[in-house]
Length: 335
Image (tube, rainbow, N blue to C red):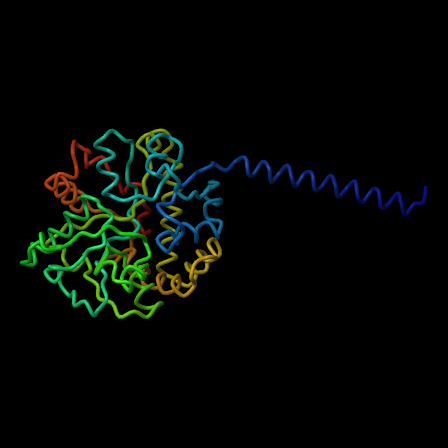
């Protein structure tokens, strides 16, 4: 046999053996990673930037985790976590507390944004500049008790009559169409997304009533937040700590470098409007932790006041054991 052929065959065998060893090593490395599932509260958006930054940079793998991101389906992320079918979920305080009161195993381990960034958005031509201006106006409603209670509290606190506000069912989530086609006069939006979309991207002349400007009338609360289960905290605290601390690292980077946050989100969800994503990332960079450098930190007073308010408004029935509903223990000291 030709020595060149023998040499070539030998080289191929050696290459195959090396490839096999590399494959076995990679498989071993993968086997060492702990699988973790996290369920979003909506489709990917800038509220999730820290998660996607950590994924893109390989920080979860560095922490020993193999993280899979799921979008919510008919079953919410909170339900999946409470029943042990997912490890973490993005959710909201107004959902977590009633669920806990009903017996769900849910614990908030970080707030994504320090303060509520909700607003009531309207076209400037409608002249809604303060809550009492809602008298005689149509509020586009999802039909929830929380909406009715918040709108009523705002209007009454500002000296108006909540009974004069018309609650009109929303036909769709496209607030631009709803406002410009006169389906309603105002709607509940989040400033980091729809206010930027309608005002800065679509160029509409809009007014907003930011909830954070009226916390003397309504409570602050955490929306969104990151939750896991008490079972996970008890059984695998090292996994919870690894995921939460790494996610905090991602949000810390999003605060420092909103352009990188936008890049990571666009890479994961290229169908998004890039202008909206970049403007939103810039806006949220100073809102994730508005009063400190530490992302994710929750305040007992915020939880207590919101739970009390929900109970007074007959939205919360039963005892959610508020002291056990949240924890900061897995956040790094300098997140």
